[in-house]
Each structure stands twice: as C-alpha cells, then as structure tokens.
Image 1 (cartoon, rainbow, N blue to C red):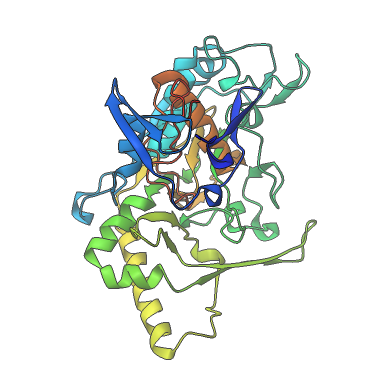
Image 2 (spheres, rainbow, N blue to C red; image 1 turned 30 degrees about the vertical axis):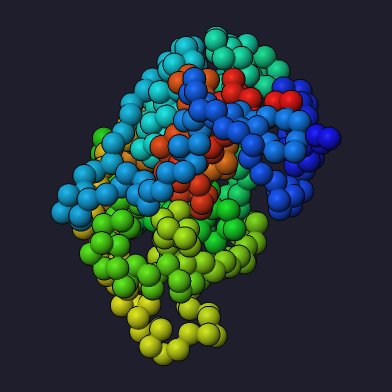
Amino acid sequence: MRRALPRAFSTVALRSAELKLGTPADVPKAVQIAALDASDGSLTIRWHDYDQTSTFSSAWLRELGSVETSEGTSGSSDELLPPHVLRVSFDELRDGSAAARWRWIEMLAEHGTTIVEAVPTTVTRSGDAVAGIGSVVPSPARASEGEVVDGVRYVAELLGPMQPNIYGEIFNVISKGEKAENIAYTSLALGPHMDLPYYESPAGVQLLHCLRFDEQVLGGETYVIDAFAVAEAFRRAEPGAFEVLASVPATFIKDHSDRDYPVLMSYQRPHLAVEPLSRRLTGFFWSPEFEGPLRCEALSPSDVEAYYEAYRRLHAAIDRAPKLKFRLRPGEMLVFNNRRMLHGRDSFSLGDGGGRHLRGGYVNIDELSNRYNLLRRAMTGASSGAAVLGNQDWSRVGISLPPRSTPRSTS
C-alpha cells in the first residue's frame, strides 16, 4: 500500500504565497527515491513507497549546488577601482516605467552607490503607479493623495519605510559649531565610516539630499569607498590580520546624554563578519569616531596586540583605497548602501556668508533586499541576484527560491 508523502513535503497556498506545513525533521530517515527523470530543464523525483512526485527546476538545483567564495570584489589592492555610480533623474523614478526604477535599484543593490538628480525639496504625492508589475514596486502614495512630503521621504519610500533612529527619521546635516551632537554637524573632516554602528541593525540605505552648497564654501566634498572590495584585497594581502579582525569583537559606542534625546548605546562585533564554512565576507563594520575600548575578558595580551596591529593595517588599506569623490550640487541626492560603502567628507569653511545644508534619512537594509529580489524576478525572471548588501546573509547570492512557475512538489 502506497502512503501519502509526509507533512514536510506539503504546502498550502495563502493569498498567492506558498507556505510549508512541515519541517525537515518530519522527513523519515529511510525515505528513498524510486525513480529520477531529468528532462525539459527540470528534475522529477518519484518517491519509493509514497504516492507522490516532486519536480525541481534544474537551474535552481545548480544554483543551490554552486560553491563560490567570492562576491565579485576580487583583485589586489593595486587593482582596486573607484566605485561605480549611476545617475538618474528624479522624474525618471517618479514618472518613469518599472524598468527605470529597476535600473536604479539594481545599481544600488549590486554596486552600492547612486545619485538622484533634480530632487525637489518637497514632493506632492500623486496616484502614480508603475505599470506592468503591479504591487512589486508600490508608489510612495500610501498616504492621502495630494499630501506634500519631504523629498528625502519620497525617494526613501520607493525602497520601503524610513528607518527610525536617534536623529529622527529625517535629519539636517549643517554645521552647528559647539552645539553639535555629532561630528557630522561640524565643519571638520569626516574619515571613512559607516553610520549607526552601535545599533544591532545599523542603517541600511542612506540618503543625503543637498539643499544648499554655496560657491563660496571651500571644501566639503563627499566621497565613498567600496569597503567590501577593500576587505577582499586586505584578506589576500594580510590573511592573518583579516582573521584577527573577523574574530576579535570591537566595541562601538554612542554616549551622549546631554541632548534632547539622551543616548547611551553600545554594541560589540568584529569589524569583519564572515560566513563560517566558506569564510565569505558578509559584513563590514567601521566607524573610528564611535569605537570604544576592547571589552573581551577572554583576550590575552597577545590577542590585544594582534588586534591593534591588524587594525592599523586595515586602517591604512582604507586610507589608500580609491575614492569616488564629488561636490554635491543643490537638488542632488546621494543614495548608497551604508552596509557596504564607507563614506566621508572633506573639511570645509563657509566663507563669507556661505552655507552647506544636506538633509538625510535611512531605510533598513531588508527593505532594499526585498525590493531588489521582487523586481529582479519580475523584470528578469531570475530568482536570485548578484547583490553584495553587507547584511550578514549567509546565502551566496541572496534569496534562492524556485521560480514562481516551477512547482516544488506535485501529487
């Protein structure tokens, strides 16, 4: 007598989403394959003693079986190139096709940096919809049509909801002199860094909208560095130092109680996060201005010495890395992946009556991953991509699921 396949192989459809009913623990140890059929780009399995077959896409199986430890950031430090940047107009994103938004999100996810041009200070929401792919790219018009919103919020919500943080959902980057609660709110130079490293989930996408940058302002250019490319070159040049910084936890701290929103936050993690089996790089955490002392009781004096020597070497590698540098113009918005790209700023002086004013905000990295995955499948038919998000995901190329058209199990 043939039996029904265990619950682990069953699925249920809920509002177009297919969900598993069981777990791998439900699969009998003795389950056996009775027959295999590889044809028409798929593999069909008939199970011994069970009245059921399962069909899998060959492309999906090959993808799952691939073993690669590089994410496309190879090359020695001498071969590193400045990051790529895509420039796109605000009108393209607001009124353009799904292809226009896909081109922007693809570049942001796979290369880390984009500039949106001619972004207005405020935007009136409208019922604009992206034709062809339904709710895959929802319009930001989720509130009342006709509502006037900040330009930063409008662009951010093309990716997802804004990420709350200690500076507010939207913040202003201007020189405040002695009243500054962050070095960014001074005219001092900012070295290469990531924002909010003391959060368990640091900012994902960062947006910086230039509202004012007068001609008499001297300096103040912005730059970005591909941290993942630097780290991979560093691994090849200094493998021992790389492993030290991937195992010894650094301390990131924000201690500022004398402000309207008092803050005392601390988080420990290594500068470099790696997937333990392949040692593939999955995260990079670097923000010298917010680094505290080592706090690991298990460290020996030699461990501490090795950490600081490795730290100095990585610091030097970052300092000599090629930078993409530019002077933002009013209306331009820099949109970049804070988990992958380090950013910084040259010092500046305002000159005679000059001003420099950027307006910023964040979107969680999971929102970028979600939008990228959905759009990639809708626009290309592919179920996974080549994004280097820096979100500590152990997957080789992000999400890897069977295409919608491929059944995973059939009775």
